[in-house]
Image (cartoon, rainbow, N blue to C red):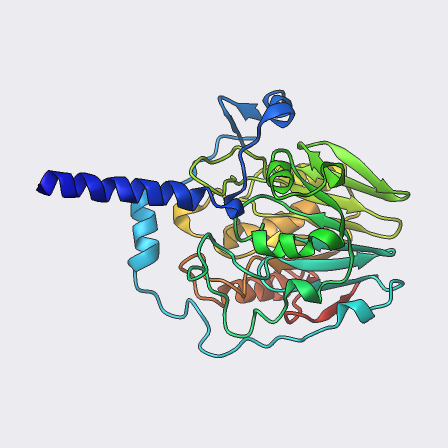
Length: 352
């Protein structure tokens, strides 16, 4: 009797778990022609994508489960602000197409308008996790919604983690996006979600695409990982550099420190703006996110004229104080004498 009850409970749990991870929001693993292309990638080995150099996901002796347990239950102070974060509500549709601007929405979501093109990067305006009660945004930071976005020429997704690729957001933007550019394999999610295959541009590291006359986009390495479901690294993660008639902008995505930053700086001199990860780091996963002590080195390796740091000020995905990344950015500005932009969420930043 008792054994039967236990077996029944386990069976129900297994079925519930299967149903949960098969929701549309989890996307779909690459298959068919896309999978065959992936298998030919020099960065794909033994059934998964790899970083340029060997990278331990978890560096703590606690292991992944122990680190996750500590993340959930270890008490820390000031992980979230007690009051609302200042936010400016900007009507993006009223910004003249002649203006070159950037608007940051908190975490890693931002809008770039440059040389007449509207670009949206990693927009997360609805849910940043598989369930709505996890990874809730800080008070006041959820002001922007998908309906606030104007028509977008180019949607760029750096990787498929939930805090960078939000199913609800992209579905609401679906009919207002011209092209979607993403790392190899991520396009499977979009095709599964009903996006026209002809609108998808998937790139491997060191590949590029001409977007329009005078617009060239390079897909470049990052040191990270990917995955929306149980199996990791089935799609690639990346950074991007866009060259426009007047600008050269680097979009770093999520990345731990490695040699690729210096190599990118040498290969693409004269970067006008580098947008870099700064937040959600921890010693337990120090190789897959930029630790504060390496942030200045990343900036110097890229040798960009201006720096903007992101991946902070909206969610608490690590155990550092919520405002620590802001202090890191200020240190870059004051101690490292770098030209660091520190806009309020929603503030219009003028690009040259």
